[in-house]
Image (cartoon, rainbow, N blue to C red; front, side):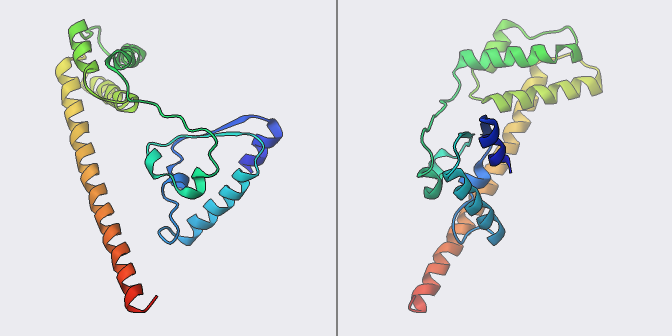
Length: 186
């Protein structure tokens, strides 16, 4: 339906976080329903006369079935400190009406910009800070931002470890299945 609208309206379709199609599509590794959905999407995508932009954080894991249908691939390098500083400034300014007048110093802002964060991580940190400030009616401070970044980093480390476990588990089952096929003569 959506691809039909793209064709009819001659517009550009952006599928943000297209990982559900690009990354999880591994034959025999996902539910049958997802494979069926992705197969239909691939067929429609192949014959689409229009522009579809897919975004992903997993560019190295794009399935071969998709790679053959991608005409242009753009890589966005990590943000540099100057870009991160602008994001911090813009995000803090956008929620400044929720925060007290106390703003961070230029030095504190540069310290934040030196951290290798992406735009989403900065947005999440500022959003958390705004919520805490509203709830506690306290001013924005560097210590609050640092505490939030520390908690978010711990959450990310936990998620990374969980993903490692899932990866190890799927590799184990994949290898076990190969061994069973070999034992069966297949």
